[in-house]
Length: 385
Image (tube, rainbow, N blue to C red; front, side):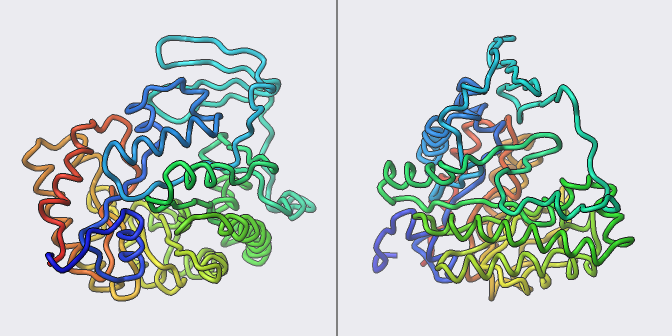
């Protein structure tokens, strides 16, 4: 250790993503919206819509808990978002109701916004005439969750990356995030019809996936022009609970591979985020060409054993994970939580590239003391000799 200079957070993450040994294990968890709200207690609606406030918040949390990187989960904030709001009602502390022309939104400190549309449009069927015309030529929205969308302002797509790089002076590893074409596909048709369509209408499904891929690829190619180090591909519905390995190889991997190739050709790392059970498809995910994998949920949330994952794919991919945010950080006692995290650090260090992280997002009510514990344990157990 005496011969190794202390690295900056950005350098530390870069070494791990390149499968090279840093001075210590990098620490970089992704915050759920609920966990951000829980720690910061901002005006919930403003935090969701105001790009500067959101950027300040994720930067503050990174520094507060000594993380080495910042994940930007929302981008393209409209600076004039208030112009579309008809009314704002404070329901209680940390809870607001926003009324728009077409919908009502409930924003709170506990979770994602809840949306109720005045007239909810029925989802299109894959058998509808001209279904391909329903796929936009350019991607201008993020399908956050069912009925919840984040509109990407065309004039301010990536302002947040400029702001973060300038205010943090390039000290931290900044990661962008885009959504998998498979996720857009399921959002368009609905989960049930989307999954059935893979079997009943395979060729048309592939046409839809291909068109979404072109839109996502164009968006991420533009994102890669910014001062970012990596892009996370959010692909939450590609695990064992939704599709088989055969369908993964046919309907997910080829399209994500095309996006990954575009990201890597621009000198950025690309990693896949798929939560839940993925133990039967690690090699398929590696064959996508991705630089790394995130989540690797352990039992009972998923089925990935970290040591097994390192043995199977750790020579070619960095691994970012795999702390159980619920059973370890939220519910375990102090002794059990520390033992779990220590074991993950020591196991992860056996691989070529490892970043300590929660498997999926930090659960909303995980305490500040538990997040502070992560850096303390990294400094105690995660120093490379």
